[in-house]
Image: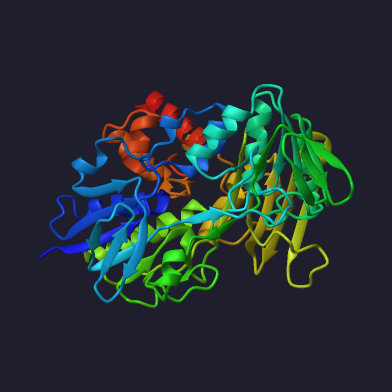
Length: 480
């Protein structure tokens, strides 16, 4: 007898969970799977929306599933419909079209929603964005931004975090005059220290982006722009808001589940009701942070093991987060503890600053292991330090050589070509794909990047590994 599993949410987490379940139960003999999606689109890679805004990718290129996916994989997929109520006693979900669906196990993959700050004029009475204001969260948001941001138009981006900067870079690349407004004294303050933030802002400034830092928005003036709390003004035809997100927990709260910042889950990704699970941005687990794809996809693998019975001992223990800025012309990686300074008594800190060339490198070492790093404009060092961080191996004694990308554990040489990369090295972090896995897939017949992506899922997450995968594919083609 099959179990009825219902997934509420057809975003990156829900779509990946469906894929993982069907990878373990291809014919649906163990799990009858229903997926509910509020958006009318097929699932798409939200991480790559900045590339859609930049014009370097078309909307259809970021789709995770094609039109025939659901039928081919025995999935009851219902899009453009919203879950309105969970009846835990009856184990039933009521949908916005009046229908209901019963479950044995329910998964909340409802993601997050944009947060709009309390700025006068920013929203209408019903809480929706005012005319000329667009959030940056969905494929439809991209359409609205591109419709409004004609070449040469003035655009203000409210929020200097990761997504705000990616949107700003994409719009600047399309020929818009962009100003980023950020209330903190430096950009990406969660992932960068002040020194790195200053170098990054300078590098982006040379690409045509202006900044108003340390100043908050006081009032939005439709058709005119933003009045700031320091008395200055930013003229803009369009305001893109990227000030953070909040976990979408409305259904969970109404159902009486335990909710804090998100839906609280344990290592089996169970909520306070053992028949209901949560993954992705809506879930709160002590071992990770929300807003990134890698934790969600790791959670999907664990939960698929549990729901199909493939591995009832599977548990999610958390994710080591590595942040990459996806902005053309900028190479930035940040990981671990980035805010420790050289005065700290319990860590070694080595730091190099080269603002003229847009480079900043910082390495934090504790107990001979990488505890944190910021690598801006230093791709060789980023690759090597990420390798050290992933493997948890001792950092070579010459810390400066490590920071310059010239040292690897055990006296190994820098990977100047794909041939030098160890087989165990993780190439695609989002999907935990190693170089060895890519080689295996190539030898099995996946001989170009598209086929490698289809077989291994490399490049289908944040997209930052695409150049590395292309390099490995080219190398394999020449040595086949």
